[in-house]
Image (tube, rainbow, N blue to C red; front, side):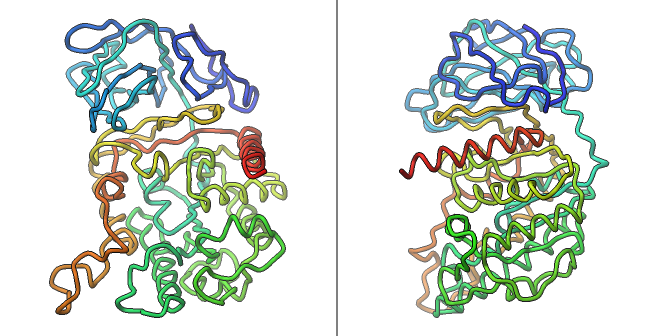
Length: 448
C-alpha cells in the first residue's frame, strides 16, 4: 500500500489505522507523509528476508520496517540486517517481545539497486508474514538556520552532534546543569558551593565543546536556568524558584560563562515567565528554519519535557515557520539506544499512550564523525570520572569509585551516544503544538 509524499503540516496528527498484525504498536503514523508499503517477510532457518519494493522516491533518507520479535530471556538480542553484501546491526532491549521498528537507513546505497533485505536474528526469533515498510524523503533544507535546544550541557552533543557539526547551527542550553550527582564533593564539601561550581564548569562546557563540531562559542549560549527546577517553575510561572542546593535565585553566575551576546548576560531571576521570554528573544534573533528539541512523551527527564513546553509557549509570540526535529536522551530507563557504540538506532520500544508521528529522520553519522562525537562527549565534565576518581590522582585512603556516583556501563553515554545514525521525530509547527498540548493534558490527568 502506498502513501503519497505530502507536506507535513497539511495532515498533521491524522492517524493511520493499524493492520491487525500490528495491534501492539503504539506509534501512530500520519497518513500522506512518506511512503507506506506492504511487504511480506519470508522466514527460514537463517532468519527472514523481503524484497525491496520498486520504485521508491529516489531522494529518500530514512527507512524503517516493522518486525515482530521474541527474545525470550536473552539479555542482549540483536539482528543483523544485510543487503548487497553490506550489513548493519540493531540491538534491542533484554527480553524484547512484540513489534519493533528496524532501521534500514544505513543500507541506503545498497537498497537503491533493489537488493533483497535479509534479517538474521541473534538471541531472538523473527516472525514472518505481512509487514509494513516506511520510507521518508524529508527534504530538509540545511541552508536554513538551525536552532538546537538542549536542556542541560551535553544534551546537544548526545542527541545531535552529528547533525549540527559543520552547519550554521546555534546551540542554546537552557540550564547550567547545577544539580544531580555530587561529582566533586571531595573538592567542595559544602553542597551549595559544590553545585555552584558544577553548574559553572558545565555551562563553560556547553559553550566551548560544540567548537569540536565547528560551532564557535559566539553561536552557543547557556541561559543559566536551574537544573531539576523546570517543572516547579512551570507550575508557578510568575514565582522565582531558587536553586535546589542553595539560596541563589539568580542565573547570572552561570551566564558569565557565555561569550555570545545572543541575549543579555546580566542579572535574571530563575522564573518560568523569564525563560519563555528568553526563548522568544532567541527565536526572533536566530530566525531558525529547523528547531531541534526533546520529545516530551518519550524523554522521561522532567527538564527535557519542559524545555519543549517552554519552546512551544514561546512560539505563541513568534510568527516564523520551522520544521521541528524531536529527540530523546532518556528513554527506556536510560538504556536506549541498545547495544554497543557504533550500532544503528531506531524507534525506542513504547507501550504507553498512542504517540502521533508525522515523519522519522535518521541522520547518517560517518565513522569519522562518530569518533569526533565520542571525544566531544568525553570532554564533558559530567560524563567522565571526577579528578579524585581517576587512577593516579587519588590521595591515600580515597576509594576509586564513590558509593554515591557509580558509573553504570550500560547507561553510559560514551556507549549510547556515538551511533551510525541520530534519530529524530519530524513535525511541522502545528503538529508540535498539538503534541505539547497532548503531553500537558496527559500530565494533568495523571496528577489528579
